[in-house]
Length: 390
Image (cartoon, rainbow, N blue to C red; front, side, top):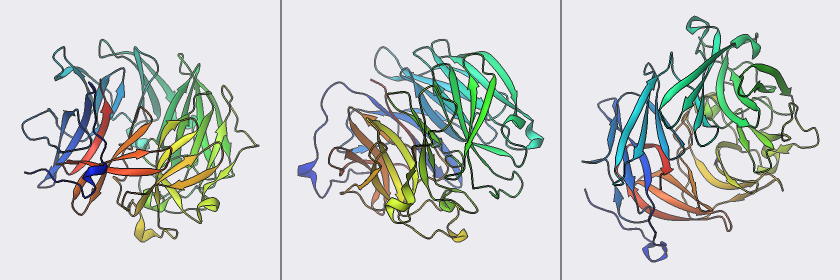
């Protein structure tokens, strides 16, 4: 294995300082995938490899971070979660683990000591209760489990997780309706958000809006974001390339004012109208009302495109001004499908791995001028998680 130099090597900024990044590298061979969590201190040159380094994570995995602790969350039959941190020498260590009843769908940080997890049954045969888990980050342990009826969310079809955020004394949970047997999405004319109290985790209300379709997409944790003001923004795409079987409303953004349990009727960002018929696939909040997004360049998605998640471009979306700016310097590329978005925000820049014909490379995006620069190559099949640990 050899490092590949960039065509515009002289333009690559050199990373300095005492930073440690962690990447979860998914390596697929003979139809089996293993995950390796590795560290890197330079994202813009050389190669990042799982060979002879890192901590292996078996089974299907998704990854989240809270208080400099990476949580390796099992799925597709794996119900264990492992906590990975840096030891005093700066090496990765598996600090502890715990086990959920079933597959965990979402995990979000509440404060420096606490994570909140949610588990939604995949079908009626898997159960009729939604479960919240309060997790102590320092002790790597579940401290409380609360169950709530799944019927609070819908009685017309089965709810599937798309996102969760905690804001003060409320938990906002987004979902789409997907038939658990056929995986069809027959109800795409309304955005739904369930609101629970925190820390009691009791159901409060279900809010809905028909100006756009369901919030987020299946398993992508992209349904809802929180800004510095505490206002919550809902992203809806109903994108066939991201799992929907139909799309009946324009893609767009809605707003829930800080502390509110209703949508703001004065705000609707019709993304599809302003982008010329395009849909956002994946989003990451940068700050100051800006989103980094992968946007499908396919304006006419058909059932042949279902789950394809292909032909994406980078964009900077301004939620406040309702503008969309294309990012230059990065190729149109394919996404990772129904996975959490592996973009990382660090000191105002965004870093995101892109799969190209020449390999997988990190791109550094400057939101202030919407430009991207090619960086280090990653020797892997795909990247499942991307974080700064120090």
